[in-house]
Structure formats: C-alpha cells, structure tokens
Amino acid sequence: MEIIKSVFPYYLCLKKQLMKILEVLTYYRPWISGLTIYVERLSKALVAQGHDVTVLTAQYDPSLPRYDVIDGVKIIRVPVAMRVSKGVIMPEFGPMAWKLSRDADVIHLHLPQFDAPGVALRGRLMNKPVVLTYHCDLQLPPGAFNQLVNRVVLTMNNLAGLLADAVVTYTRDYGTHSPFLAQYLDKKLYIIPPPVTLAPCSVAEAAQFYNQHQLNGHEVIGFVSRLATEKGVEVLLKALPKIWQEFSNVRVLHAGPYKDILGEEAYRKRVLPVIESYGDKYQLLGPIEGAELTAFYKSLDVLTIPSLNSTESFGLVQIEAMRNNVPVAACALPGVRQPVTMTGMGAVTAVGDHEALADAIIDILRDKKKYQRDSELIKQSFDPMQTAVEYIKLFNDLRRGTFAPKTTEPPVYDELRAMRDAYVNKEISA
Image 1 (cartoon, rainbow, N blue to C red):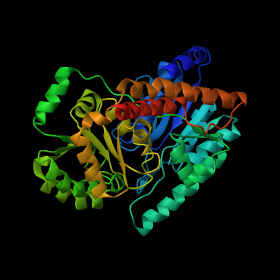
Image 2: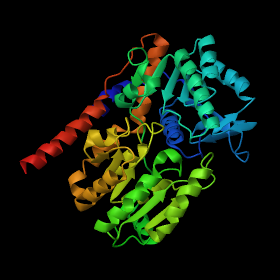
Image 3: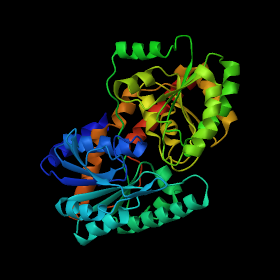
Image 4: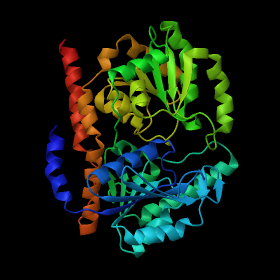
C-alpha cells in the first residue's frame, strides 16, 4: 500500500529521535472501553518503535498494582480517594503529574478527563509539548447531578483545549460536528486514524468458539459494547422481532461487560429483563479478548453499532469486524458513520430508528457478499504502527516549532473511498 511505503523511510529516521512520552488518562487497562484500548494499542506501538512510554492513570480497582510494566509500557496508577459518578478524585495525582512531566519530552492527554487542564498547565510551565486526543463527548445519563458533572467536565475539557498545543481527532466528520473540536478546526486540530489490531486466531480456535455457542444453522448478529445507556442496546432489542420475521434463526452475540458498570445500574435493570426474555437468541458473553475476540468476529454475519449520542465518535469495533469480512449496520452519528461510509461495507441508519436498523440488518443478511470489501486494505489503513508514526511526526513538529493544523482527511481514508468506488463501479458494470 502506498501510504506504508511513504511513511517507512520517515519511520527509520524517527528511530534516531527516541522520546519519553507521558500518556495521561483516567482509566487504563484492564478497564475495557474504546478509549483505553486505543491508548493501549498506541502505547505498545510506540514502545515497539523504541520510545519510552509511561501511562499515568487511576488505580480504580485497589487490587491493581500501583506500578506495573505491561508489554514494555510503564504504568503508574494513582489511588482513588472518592468517586463522583464515573469520575474519580485522586489527591496524589497532581504531585505525580509534576514528577512525570519533568522527565517527559511530550505530554499526551486523552479526553474526556477531569484532571487534564492541570497536567496541560504543567506542560506549558515546563515548556513541554502538550497534545490532547479528544476521543468523544461526555454525556452522562439524565439527572440533575449528572448534568452538573457534564458541565464541570466540559469546562475542564475547554481549559485543557486552550492550554494544549495540538488537538487530535479521528475524523474530520466528528471534528466539524463536535462543538468542542470545531473551535480548533483551523487552529490546532490534527486528524490521525485510530489504531486497530486483533490477536491471531487459528481455524481450530474459531471452530471451537462457533461450536461452543452452538451457532450452526444460525445467522449471527454481533454487538460489542458495555451495557451502557449511550450504546443503544434497546434499539437493537426493538429491531429484533422484525428481523426474526425474515430470519427466524438469527442469534445475537453481545460481547462486553454487563455487570457492575459504574453509573449504569438503572439502565441495566431496565434492559436486562428484555434481553432475558429472548432466551438463547440473545447471548451476553461478557468481556472477551485475544484470540477469543477474533473468533467472535469470525462467527458473525453482521455487526451492529446503534449508539445514541456523541459519546461514540468512531467505533473501533467496526474496523475489527471489517478486518474479518463482516459488514456493519451503523448509526448515522458523526464519526461513527465514517467506517461504513468510507468503505461501503454495510449500511448507515438514522440514530435511534429501530425499524431502519432492522431493515439494514435484513438487507445485509440477504446478500452479505454485496457488502464485503478488501479486508487487507482495511487492516493496513488502521495499523497501530502507522498511527504511532503519525503521532511521532506530530510530536516532533511541535518540538521543532513547525506544527501546522492538519484538517484534511488522511491519505488512507482516500484509499478506502477509492476501494469503495471500485466495488460500486464493478457492481454497476455487472
């Protein structure tokens, strides 16, 4: 692929300019979310390129070690004194941030994050480049207290944005529609494709997963998410009866945490009885990773992502599915609609419209091959090593004082659109 050829010489040059990078976020692994998985993949890729990476995060579970090294990434977890909704208060965070910032060449913040402006200010005072990656808006469930928390976090995000030297997002689509990001469009916004990878999975492992869940003779809809308000589980639940009228053997495999999720107890109580009423047609698998997650994707006929608000900005799971030739039925949220729009590998439906979601899934199940594309190109386009190279280029530009906003779509996105158009033209010719 041309983009790989173009960045490879630059990558070799960067190997001589190794950096100490401080990654800062509220929750890190083993916490499961798109944000934590993004930072984990990026950090591992940066370490593989020879850089020194330290992650500063919360010790949200007291059983987790304060200091750890995983895949070469140093992890420092700060004890949590108290919780405020999904946020945490950490008195020791400030002193630790000072200590680590002094030793870092660049500070990389991941929002939403309550502590971000304090760390960004430290970077400014120490004359260290501060990069902010904005993963999504924060929209907590309804309620007066949650709305207050939303406003406080938004204020802290805005302060961090003002202090940061560059603000990164995944797509121009999300950048132009997010009120937070739009204010930086021509000033310091920078678009970098997210890192997506999956563990290898043998034919035997895939077959074992398939047989374990008794999927023979069934069409399979996949769903990957926490059982959380913004994920739109109820949209799929309402769509299923119509889908079953066309495909009576359809089963849903839902991978992701569904117990003890902070702030989601009321939502779980509301949707769980509906899920349970569907019996073995809707299976909650819990969190799965590694080869088992890859086997999960290989067992699917379609993946759905019916999220309801801008706490979802892309949906990395869409790329994970597409790497395994699985089409996607996605909602039309800014950013979330981009993987399907760029590749043509699925359908986009109105947010919250369960009838449209049902129709899209039915159409995909009727002719899955019509939506399949070059999975190898999709895999290369979101390779974590490429994401890391783009970040290092940004970091070096900031250190040299040559930074310029990058609001045009990355070349890999153009390649995906060209692939989409080639498939469409081929179908028209046929």
